[in-house]
Amino acid sequence: MNILEVRNLRKYYATQKAVDDISFTLNAGSIFGLLGPNGAGKTTLIRMITGIFYPDEGEILFNGRKFNPQTDILQTGYMPEERGLYKKMKIGEQAIYLAQLKGMSKADATAKVKEWFIRFEMQTWWNKKVEDLSKGMQQKLQFVTTVLHEPKLIILDEPFSGLDPVNANLIKDEIYRLAKNGASIIFSTHRMEQVEEICDHIILVNKGQKILDGTVKQVKQQFKEHLFRISLEEKAAAVSSPAFDVISTQENDLIVKIHEGNKPNDVLQYFLQQQHSIVAFQEILPSLNEIFIRLVENTPLARQFEKITA
Image 1 (cartoon, rainbow, N blue to C red):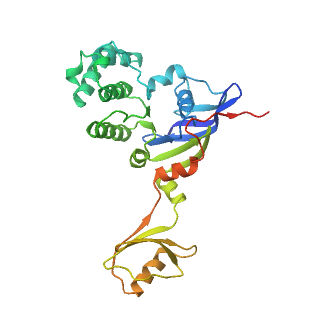
Image 2 (cartoon, one colour):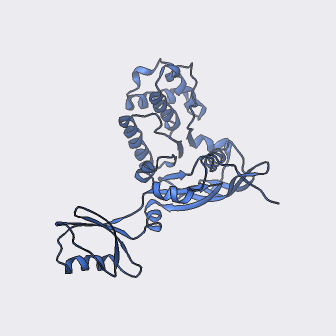
Image 3 (cartoon, rainbow, N blue to C red):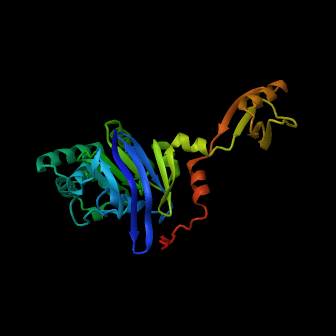
């Protein structure tokens, strides 16, 4: 079932396009990567999904019906990249207060906050103020306040910012657990290796438009270049075949590019016929980082919105 469906969203600022006809669907229990360079329109898109901005055109469906900011926001958790915490407030008191804003009773909020603080080893922080916490400790607190009311839709903008590897893995495990329990997660980051590891599905936006949409596997297959790595027991002598070109060699490893119309088996057959002992044979797929750069390489990091023409 789709927890969220975005249909032809548009948002204009005066004569400038911030989001220009973007559509996508988010399945229940999935982890969805929202990618794009700075200024691509991701933040505007997120603010429309959370009811902070109203779209100029298009519609948002939540649980199969039109999104209602007054009620559906209680089933949403949003963790912005910027800190959204009160610096002078004690963190235990603050977490309870924020949970109550999401519709929880004080008793339920207190019990749930204590549960999460134990899980994240934050019990001793209860009476500390946010301003006394490190950036990583603030990030853990912000994650807890985002998810403790058990929202159906969770939006995480750079959730690993400021975290050491141990705490990053802790947050990552919780993301997997929340998705397994049925929460749908939109994950926005510039760290492509995290997207590749965590996300089921991704979209890439640039200049306010969606330019890529699919599962991680589909996207990598779409941009593959028919490159393969072959590892041999011995050093390869001169290699020449109408089925492929040798791109590079290093010790006993070769990178080859298969010609159109040929298959990986044609490469294997060549080396077997030459009586080479093959140790490994692996297709080389592009990383999401390489695909991202290829698609937006001509985009300045801070771009001007595309102007609307008459």
